[in-house]
Amino acid sequence: MDPTTMLRTAACLFVLAALGGLLMAGIRFFGGRNPPPWVALLHGLLAGAGLTLLVYAAATAAIPRLAIVALVLFLLAAVGGLVLNLRYEWNRLLLPAPLVVGHALVAVLGFVLLLAAAWG
Image (cartoon, rainbow, N blue to C red; front, side, top):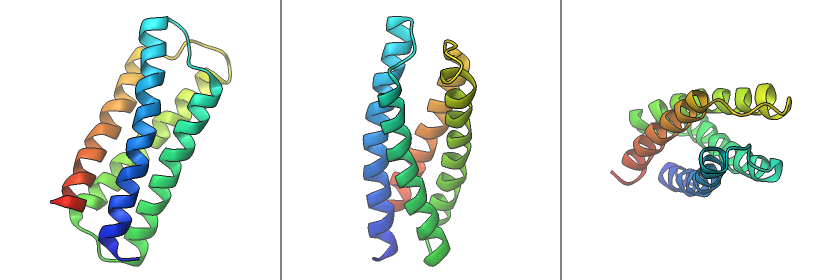
């Protein structure tokens, strides 16, 4: 598979993950509760698949510098997602709004950079 196809496929996986993220944010901010665990699991699975493909692309092909920066941002977002899941969701604590927003902003910035690398 060529690098551009890998970047575009990763972007598509991140779009699906983002839809789950929007659903979870809506539940958290408008419902005042944590989202169902299955939504968080699906979100993490799709984002993890996109991240894995992006890491593979970076390790096996020459990808644009923007894609490398996107990869770093997605890794940071993944750490934030792990903290949200393992510290708060598992302990049945309400997800802290600043961490949810920070996680989303870092992921969105990574996504924009990935789009620029894949289609720019």
